[in-house]
Every structure is written in structure tokens, then in C-alpha cells.
Length: 262
Length: 267
Image 1 (cartoon, rainbow over the protein chains, first blue to last red):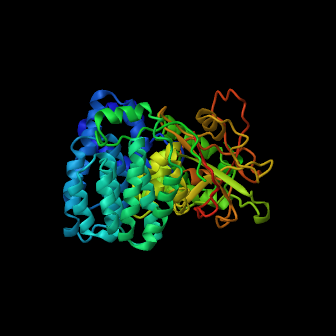
Image 2 (image 1 turned 120 degrees about the vertical axis):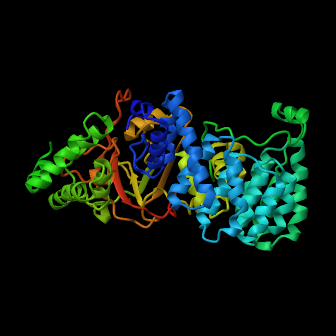
């Protein structure tokens, strides 16, 4: 189905098209044959005329509300829908997802994949306060802990995140995931505040399970030993200095680069 | 039309042949599906019984399900995956590679982490060298993330020396890579991740020559005209200013990511 055809559809027809597209039942512009449907939908969305685009956004919101009412849906469809809405970043999205996430305990049949997809979308879509993420953590510490940690970091509350570390699952894998989260938090701090952050982490590690703490301890020691000169203040640091350490939620700006993983 | 397609079509009953031809005729006017029809008509890699079976399945689904032809075609294809010729194990390439949207792979890593990682954080690490200290810790999650989706992976390799990184001889830009591998559209703000892996360490799944059934309704697949060729070949996208040659193309069941080679490249 080409863009001109979608532009000619009525409001409800576009919603029906969107649902079919999320289920992989529409022709979409794909980079590769196995690409997720929502990426093709986003490419189509950019080419639509304003009225059709508005209908598509309304349709996405309708489908999200439908899903959030009961938390039901096939896992692949829900993952596609949540990927789409977390990219579109409509203002109503976080509220609907928060409402559903708070009901997880009352929805025993909701799959773990769907639960993770909802929490992941909340981390990505809009920052929530620490109290919300602590509520999610306490719902199921073994399963929700690391996404709750990520949620607090995404809301740019690195010291709140640090205080959550003793509640993380005691496994090396969880420690590796926590390092990735802490690195993101560290990266968002003023250069001059990074050492103190790492030192605070080191202090709290004694309260954590040792399997979990191991990778973080290694990471923290590396950070301390490779500490740069505090005199090299960047423009970003200066802005942070003027506006405060937790002045805004994190935004993630893709950079075209060679990512070297060693 | 390829002789293989003509033969498969001729083997159908009159009713099924009519259904197939009507199904394809209904795609007229939609450029992407017209291209898919051309690909089917030009296919040479499907053995005769499989080509006949594919077209019969399409006709049956059109008749019994009364469904939309594109959906019927895709469902027929899903019953006929990995039917192209197999590269003998002792001739398999050592290194295979594929290209993904970086967002797609970041989601695969986050999903495979089982609630350990948020997509946006993974994407940030894949894209941003300033958080490279964390990249070492990403390793265990990288090796758990699938290389493809839907249990089927398309890959390329260097047919002059398959122990080379498959991307070594290809252009270094997103446009150049897309051209060489004949990939679909990409918006200006999207980035690509170039993944390559050791075939043996990833479980050595059988490598098949791709067919229209593997491609389903993906319009950018092109059948290789030489029926005897051991693997498929991409058709570089026009205008192909660098004159890049068609690249080898195979499909396989989802391998493990255990043989993934680092570093990977993001462009």
C-alpha cells in the first residue's frame, strides 16, 4: 500500500491499517526482510500528509489505550505497538503506561515479555519520578529491579539510583547490566562530580550481593584510576554548572560514529 | 519468465493456475507487489517440486481462505522456507555478515536481556563512543541477542576470501552499503550496524541459496538468473556510482550469536 493510498483513507481506515501493519499484514518500506514492522510504519508516517499523520497518531493512541485497559495482546504485536508509541512520544503515552504498570500485580496473566516491554517503553518514553520506580521495584524486585534502576537514571536522578543498588538481584549478569546503567548516569554528570559519584557507589557496594557487586567494583576502580584532570571543563560542563546537575531529563542524541566494543 | 517458473505454472491444474494468475494480477498498480511478482516469475533457485508446491499452496490459500492475495502469498511462502540449494559444509564461508538498523539491534539486545537493559540505553552505547567503558560489559548481552528475527537470517560474505570481514571490500558509507547489498529504504537519521560472525562458532546452520519464498513480499530481493549458481547475488541499487559488483547472499536458520566478531561498526 503506497503513501498516496493511505493519505486517501478515512480516519478509522487508517487506524485499521495501522493495526494490520503492526501485525505484519501490510506492505511496508523495510530495510531488510526481517525488520520490525514499526520501523516501516515510522518511515510511512514521515511521508503522510498532515491529516493522515494525525489519524495515524490518533490510531496509535487508540490502540495503546485498548492494550492498556487490560494488558492483553499477542507479545509480538504489543512489542511493535510499544516500540512505535515510545518513538512517537505522544503526551498521553506515559500516563497510560504508568496506569498499566501500577496494575501489574493485579494482572497475573500478563507475560513477563509484555511487562518488560511496558517498563522499557516507560524508560524510553518519558521520565517518571523515583517514587514510581520504587513502587515498580517493590512489586517484584527480582524481575523489575534493573528496569526500575534504568528508569531512575533516565529521569536523571543518579543518586536515587545509587541507593537502589542493594535491592538488585545478586548475579554477575545483573552486575553487568547495572554497570551499563551506571555508565549512562556517570556520562551525564559534570566532570567534576563524577569522582564523587563513583566513590559513593564504592561505599554502597558492601551492602550489595557479592556476585552483583563484582563487575561494578571493577568498573568503579577503572573509573577512579583513569580520572581525568578536573581542570578540563567542557562547554557541556559549563552548561551543567550554570543550570544544575539534575537540570533536565536525559535526552539521547544519536551520533554517527564508529562504535568500538572491545 | 524463468523456465523454472514456466514449468511450475504449467504443472498446476487449470483451476489453480487461474487462481495464481488472478492473485498476481490483483497486484497490478502497486509497485512493490508488481516487483514481487516479477521476482517470482524470474526465480531459478527453487527445485521444481518446491516451486509447484509453493504456487499450489498460494492457490489453495486464495481459494479456501478467500484471503487478501498478499497475505496468502506470505503464508504460502512460510510453508516453503529454506528450499534453495545448500552450500556443502566443507565449502561454507568462514565469516558471514549482515546489516541491521541500529535501533533494531538495540531492541534485540534489550529484549534478550530479560529486563536487564532499557532499549534507549543500549542504543546510546551502540552509537556513542563516550560511553565505551560500558561496551565491554555489553558483551554478555550482545552474545545473547539474536542476529535476525523470525528465525531466518540473510547474510553476505566475501567470496574471494571468506575469512575476510564481509564488509571490508564494500563502500564505507550507509548509501554505499545499501547500494551494494540491495537493501530497502533508510531515512537520513537512521544508522546501520554492520555485524559479522564466525559461521562455525555460531553453530554452522545450513547455508541456503535464497528464494522468493524466503523473501516473501520483500520487494528488494532479486532472483539470480543463473540456476546453477551456488548462492544468491544481490542486485546493487541504481545508480550504483561506484560500480559495486553484486554481493553473495545466503539464508539460514537463526544461528547463535556466540561467534559474533568484535568490534562491530556503526555508520
